[in-house]
Image (cartoon, rainbow over all chains, first blue to last red; front, top):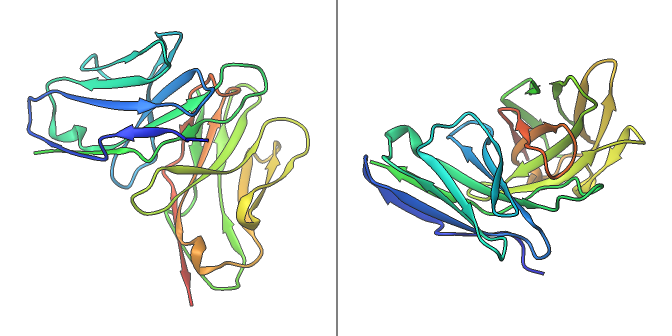
Amino acid sequence: DAGVTQSPTHLIKTRGQQVTLRCSPKSGHDTVSWYQQALGQGPQFIFQYYEEEERQRGNFPDRFSGHQFPNYSSELNVNALLLGDSALYLCASSLTVAGAETQYFGPGTRLLVL
Amino acid sequence: AQSVTQLGSHVSVSEGALVLLRCNYSSSVPPYLFWYVQYPNQGLQLLLKYTTGATLVKGINGFEAEFKKSETSFHLTKPSAHMSDAAEYFCAVSRSGGSEKLVFGKGTKLTVNP
């Protein structure tokens, strides 16, 4: 059973550029959440997608946007990159049904903005 | 709003000694509580979770945690540390299940000395 996969594993961009990160959820899961983990910090919630719609959003600017496809995979887009966007971006998948409590995380994409 | 405080950003123990990682939470609704572990350059792996019912929760790799509502705590313990336990540990809270965002603490880095 494949777990959550993310691509690419590493990425280097320069300020002002745009980046797209990709996530495939665990088999059978319908919900994808994205988190940003800055160096030395805990993950912070960016947003969550369910049924191809953004369902919840954390305290991140509009430069951060996303998409969910009919096969439940998801993309995270960041425009006008800032140095402070350098972080590990984690995707988590889950199932939106009663009793399904756990979010399963992928290995992350490490983004470096120069 | 929910929040998590992890006391001690770094904890060092000897191999075979007790591991105690502290987590206190704040939540206006009955919380769901989680401990995740992160090994270097990897994503997050679920150790254990509390949703409802029994307050003492057992997880993988010999870890357990006890939910104490009166103390708003969910401390993680392991009777005997192993070298392979060296990692960063994150406590997280959510309002309910997989459809709700996780709010993480800043993490505790565990070092195990031979």
